[in-house]
Every structure is written in structure tokens, then in C-alpha cells.
Image 1: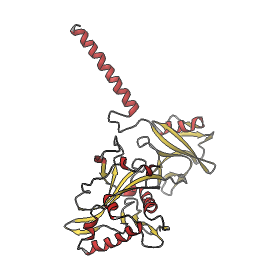
Image 2 (image 1 turned 180 degrees about the vertical axis):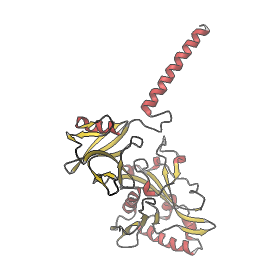
Image 3 (image 1 turned 120 degrees about the vertical axis):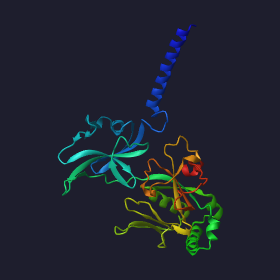
Image 4 (image 1 turned 135 degrees about the horizontal axis):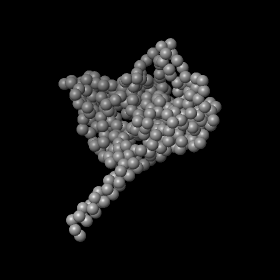
Length: 339
């Protein structure tokens, strides 16, 4: 075979390889596999005061609506919904597509911010104009809840109990009181354990998980007040086992969890509940390197993307973002919790 023939064969092979890669990127969302071009979603549609439920898939929210609703939905060339079941945009009412996001809010759907398992709502929304001229549309009267998994751990429980610092001793006493109520033994809490909860945001899901798996024999009481900037989950009228901030910027800031609040232990070191999320773009659920120290407050994490959390009582300096901990991966979640 001469050199010219070899060059032709080589060129054909390169073109074929490029075509295969391009096809893979279209189907899989890129060579890195972190982005998807097809997303699945639950779709809710307001229909005469009730919400109908559908499922759909697509590369855009428009494609998802077409897949879920078929010929019942008409979408114009600009991407907006023109009508549903023959009911068209008219006067102050228009069909608006929303996506549920943490913390517990509906936001306008955006094709640059889609993820698997999300919830979309098609709402025949009423247009309202404020005194300043700002135009808004009514949002769905619907609350969506998701399941999430939490790894809870206090690896330095013995050191905390033996600390000579008064502030640590006081918190340790309250912590032990909650642990005794829960029935969780020392070995289990030091090694850590998984629990599962459901809620409209990660805070609600954690509160639900802690109650169901640790305090199920106690009556749960939720205290909220518009004049407060926090929410409290209590048991049988006793002091709350979980209290967190509800302001927009600090939604989910831990004020108290299982009796412990942030404690200054000197030397610019603090003992507090540090929090981690598992990388939603990880290619596997069995890679410990995919745990990331939270850069946002707990309740502001989008549960569509972040279903796995770790909450660990540990001590770090002001400049440290958590410390090296051996957090089990989501692949270690007991099968009994998966159902």
C-alpha cells in the first residue's frame, strides 16, 4: 500500500472519529458528560382550580411541555406558550412557565438552568402592575417537596465532652440531652449515619428526617412568625431541636441544631455544624472527592441538583472551610432508605 493511499485512509478515519465524537456530544451533552441535552421533568398545569400532573422530556422546557402535553399546548415561535386546551392568552392573563427552586419559590423557567427531575408549572397567570410600573405575574399556589439524604456525624464527640471550656460544656450538655432522646448511641454518632427526609427545601427535609429517624415518638411543632428571622422545630413544647434563618440571603443558616450553636473555642477556632453537598455533576456516587464544603447557606441549595448532604460537628479556624473528613459517598446509603 503506497503512502498516498495510507494518507487517504487516515483522513477518512479522522473524519469518522470526529463524527462519532460529535454524535456523542449531541446525545450525552458534551465530552465531559457533565451537561445533559435531554432532561426529564414533572409538569403541573393549572386547570379550573386544580393542578394536573404530567411527565415530559426534552432539551428545552418548550420541548418538555410538548412531550408532556402533546397537542393541548401551542407554543409560539418566540418560545412563549400561546394556548393550552384552546385557552389562549387574553387581556391581563397569560400562560407562564415556572420552575420550582429553593428556597420554596417559583421562578420563571429558563433553558440555561434546567436539570433532571425538576418540576415545571404552566400557570394561567394574571398580570399585575405595581405603583412603580413594575409588571409581575401571579405564581402557582402549589408547594413542591423533594426527598433528600443526610449524613450526620460527630467524630470528636469524646473531645467535645471533655473540653474544659464553659461554652463547650454547656452546648455538650444540651447535645447529650437530644442524643439521649434520640436513642442514637455514641458509636453510631461518631461513625455517622444516613437519614432521609422530605421537604420544600433542604432545611425542611433535614427537620423531617431528624424527626422521623430520631424523634418519631415525639409530637412535632413548627414555629414561624413573620416578625422573626428564623424558624424553629420543637418536640412536645420543649426547646427546638432545629432552628435556622429564613431571610433570603441567609436562608438555612444554622442557629441551633441538636442543641449546638456555633461555639468559639479560642485560637480563632470554632466548633460548629459544617455542611457539605455532593457534586451534582459527579459521574459516580462512589467518589469521596466529590464532597464540597458548602459555599451557600443550607436552605438555598436547589434540591433538584443537590439531593445528598453531610452535616458534621467539627472544629476549624476562621479561615478553614471544613476539615478533611472521611464522608461516606451516596453509594453507601442503606438500600432500606432508598424506598
